[in-house]
Amino acid sequence: MAKENKTQPTAASVPEFLGALPKAQMREDGLALDAMMRRVTGYEPVLWSGIIGYGRFDYQYPTGRSGRWFGLGFAPRANALSVYLCLGDGQENFSPWLARLGKHKMGAGCLYLNRLSDVDLGVLEELLTEALTLNRANPVLTEVLE
Image (cartoon, rainbow, N blue to C red):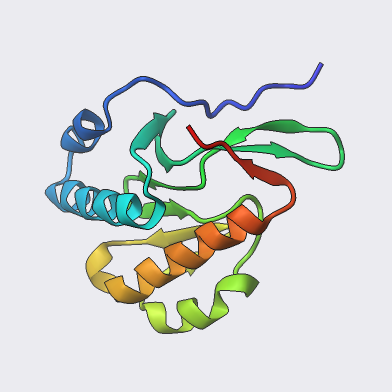
């Protein structure tokens, strides 16, 4: 039997989650990023086990593994904002935006920002829009319109 993802959508309040963040800068950045993600995706946020996700995609890998995930998301962590762009892809697709973004780190489909003031917010919004477009075009993912 396939193991279910540990990260699942919850009914917890996103505004309460953001309001309870211990650092004022993280709260401010979280609220600003929430507004940007709502604009880019057109979705209301859902708290997925500590990650704020926008939209829902079902995925099915050729191996048979399947599950659900969000289209875009972010998690305010102790030292950085983790911005979830895509499932498992690296930075190659995002190079034109990353070159203009500002101070950041990039992992496998995840962007790490110390604070929003370190980056160009216009470029970040363009990057998020491109990431969502790529997710919608990914044959492994199927957007669930609810």
